[in-house]
Image (cartoon, rainbow, N blue to C red):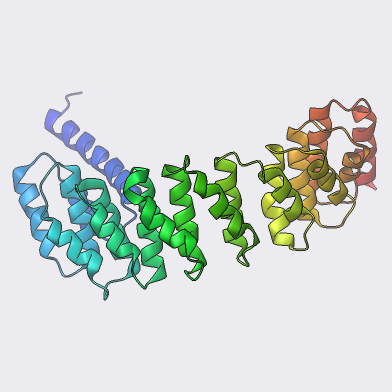
Length: 311
């Protein structure tokens, strides 16, 4: 059979393009078909010029994606085009922050604008700006982060961003531990957890006790959040709290606790209780915990569990 070489190559090319479209569609996180198509046009001066024309498009999404494509191709883009998008308060938050991330990644001397956006009255915008400061050397951003962390009148999400950035780039700052401890007792649960994570990152001696305090508190959601931390800080008291939770009726707490107890290879009679009259998730974690601890009566227990399930 004689093959048409051009037809075979064309079919192969079409197949490759289809695969590229799938990959790029996922990477760009864009629903704009034009933007996706633009991203495929590489190594072609004529196509690059077409992409540049999209910088004048009325759709800000197309503008942002065109900027991204051009910069990834090593083309020059006037930074004013990007900063105008960032500073345009009429545009959606997602568009402005996408442009801000591009600006920080591709343009030199982006920190002044980042600091300016960090002072925005729009908490979501300043939170993103502050989180991006974690990519810069500590000496360049510490004063800005410190100002936010020390002022508890800021929205909790803004303070969280500042603490996270500080733990990324200013971990050696002695003041950071004291500042984080301040927010362990803050009303916001997510800020409490962020503060605890910062203390873990700076290897604070206070971590073990704080985990114990949260585990023994009345806030169920807070308890659930810190259960996984016991694996890294398995004090006698913290492990005992997890074992005591196996005698309650909170299935989610039991499952999370059993997962940690299994990783710690903890041996305790109470772990066996999870095999009976509980959700599948609890029973599975109970079995795993018993296996990891090398429980001598495991075979008999498994037989009993199967018998009970059949009744």
